[in-house]
Image (cartoon, rainbow, N blue to C red):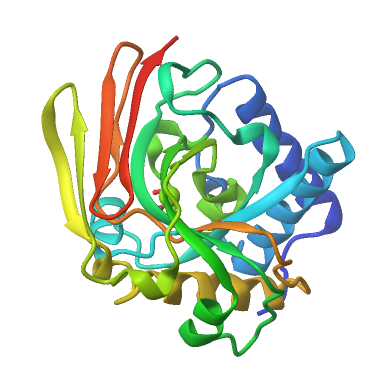
Length: 265
Ligand code: OOG
Ligand code: MG
């Protein structure tokens, strides 16, 4: 695949997506204006968004996989695993006052995150390479937010929107990957005391480490490797759950403990 958009068009789309994010204003999906836009174009927009945030002082601390579970693919009607970058500014801390300020229509997702101890480089990265390079695994609660109207998008649009990345809350209990079976670990996601979703981590590509290998292999196609010390989320195990200020969310992963938050304005 090669790009169909000019550099000027890529910059204009990065302007549009950055403005939608910064002003919490949703926009129509990009393929309405650019029907031939492909994934190379979309990752070029994502790269430009990343370049601008880094130039503004944010640090890329890791990456995420998106749409890696059957549950998410069915929910979004899109069977295309994607990647996005994470910066230090997107991180939030578990607690009773987690702000949703600046978000349009946030949803939460229960995920397993990997923290790496050596560099990973595609394009042939496997689940085994990922496990060998993993320092520890922990839970994460991702808060996604699409910059598209009604949370509706296609593959190129969501990639250009950094795979709906907005915020993430790392869990506090770290485990060595060899000490847990990452396929059979189950999660219960509660909102306001009721079960909103539940599932087992094998729904993420059969094994969440495969989602990390996917991230590394897509990064290789962008000319990037994954540095040691990266925090990488493997994608939501269950369907995402909508939230609003006032909601209390508890994500309970066997082996990783709970992440409890109360969302506020
Ligand atoms: C795209 C991002 C999906 C995940 O974990 O699957 C994602 C979306 O559904 O908005 O972060
Ligand atoms: Mg996610």
